[in-house]
Length: 226
Ligand code: AMP
Image (cartoon, rainbow, N blue to C red; front, side):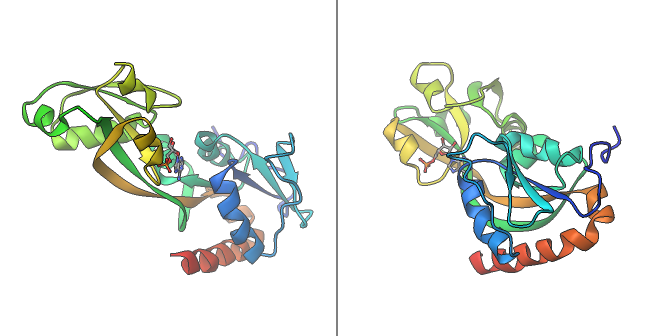
């Protein structure tokens, strides 16, 4: 499909795709550095399209894993998404100019506290692994030469080993307190995760004059956070 098919008319209008929570909260200071204030709070408003102090810039609130899709098809000109989400999406149609150094965490393998992961791997056991991050998990275990049956879940991966759905999970970990609260242990760190700015490739060309100062402000502000 033509990625610019849904681009909003008028090359001065910009739509930014964000997800609620940490990415939204951590993007606000970057927007502020670009002179943009979001006028509504997505935690209290039911609106999915939020106005800003700049009549040409609007923010849409979508599920984190949908951000790359909205940007790929040009329904949003740019967005902020975690490396975890971008790896699963594949990055098609997206220009990824900046690591924003926000919403940092890590992608890890975790198991029940009593499960001897090292021995199971050494003995070549076939492991059942529950995860939302199927691509990343598949590549990780293939690199290690570990045979796995991947079980795709959409939420609360931590529950899977507790009720015998899987031997292990692959999930993002920040403080580790969710794992600890569920008696799970992090046994392997797969990669560091942070959120990146993604830009629709057609918008980058057609709206460059409007986008460029915002991207530059984001880059300067994110370097301060590094
Ligand atoms: P924590 O207890 O601080 O380790 O946080 C772990 C939980 O929060 C997991 O269920 C994750 O799905 C979620 N989480 C933590 N950090 C992030 C992040 N940067 N992006 C997405 N989800 C996260």
